[in-house]
Picture 1 (cartoon, rainbow, N blue to C red):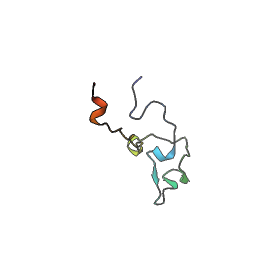
Picture 2: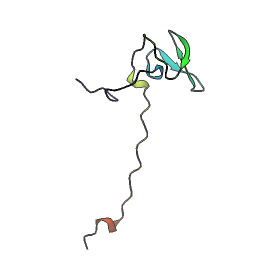
Picture 3: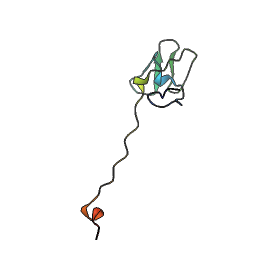
Picture 4: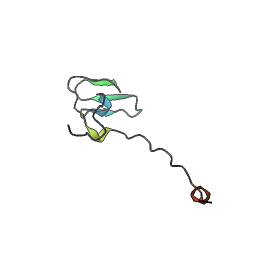
Length: 72
């Protein structure tokens, strides 16, 4: 099976649907099919759109000094 863009186990939600658009306050989805629905609602017309996903933040890389690499 081919690896999807954000993994193979993506829970369906209207916030990732092709037919939905987030409201200005970000608390609901304006669905072309169902109207106003909650963020994590899902209907049978759900179509995944990978471009609507917001990637998680990168972890902060640790900082190293020259003493960490010294072989004394």
